[in-house]
Length: 192
Image: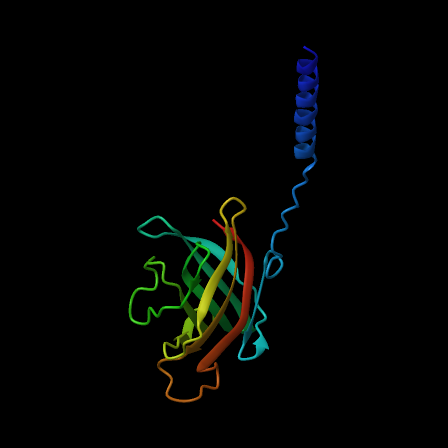
């Protein structure tokens, strides 16, 4: 009986000390990666100079297999009658790196999950005078979705692209015939 009492006390001691050690374990905090740029902001260099506008994001629908498609877009007024715009369409919300496709001769609004990029120049708010599409001979063009949050409705990523005016026969005094976009980054709230 005496041994049974000591054995019970020893057992009780070990079980309480083990439980105490388990409860004293502190998990290290999970620190998320810092955002690439502040929420609600975007930036990129156009031919080496900071573009003055801000991109916006909007839900563009779903692909035939159910993935959310996002459109990034923005425009700036160069002067009272001349504006410049950029659109990145068919961007899937999946965290992935994509090469830009060229819709050049097909409907740009087909939601196929192959991102395309386009710049345009407009006079008097409605007269398109030029466009630049992806240069398919340049291999460094990409867009990468780093983070998509379906609850907060945000999308974060980066891009680089080389575009050219496919119809230009020489330099144009109104807009560039080749556009190199570098250091592109965005962290945007998605409009519905």
